[in-house]
Length: 296
Image (cartoon, rainbow, N blue to C red; front, side):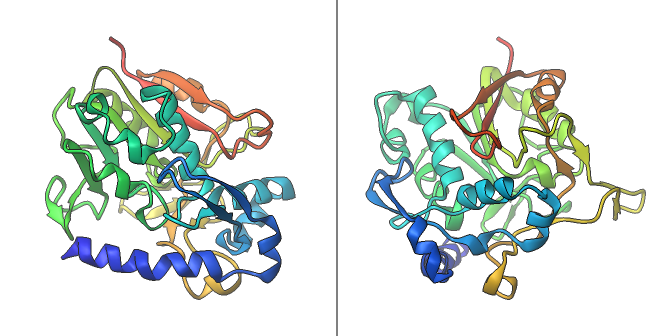
């Protein structure tokens, strides 16, 4: 039943993201081919996807603009955002350089033989998850809450990335996108990645990062009572600007961490060999994808 509900939400949500936007945004649409679904399409810019308080916190207009592009530029076929397509590009470069879409990659026998974990639904309205779900060995999970870890809740396995219930050396590949910033102890999550990866396996992930910020900052932590203790004014991801202040484009998630360039060093400290996939000319770092590879 949950899968049917999610599909219905996607059918309703995609037209909203693609069409409910300021008229002037249309001038920033771009043609292209989607590396998630493989279709030749138009990518739709939507300036309402980023909330005003997040732009204020970033300060620099170029950061806000770069992240607005990252979180929009939606594929008119599958609704994959620029962030999702960058994630798809890296997957293809690592596992099938001759292919042009994840839709094709998931049909490749070598990739289908891998043990893959997807942590939280990747992509606007499940755009990348819809492709990954075709993998016969995909272990998909969402974090629904601290109770019932490892159990099926609302149609998906419930996991906490900082204390996974999977056995050691379970996966060749772990995938997560813009999740670690919402985890109270992201270092514990990276150590858990190391534990459940097979030798030579990797965790590919994205997080919001500002390339000019040298050090990672803790915005909030959990207190003894399990409630957030704020070191900086609270910031949430999910609710946008404009009319999206009243129609959330996603769940409001508290940001515990703001990442800086030292994330590469932190990945190494957590027992993984860091990998950094950058786009030339991306001065902000909005299009970065990170990897952490297990020894062996």
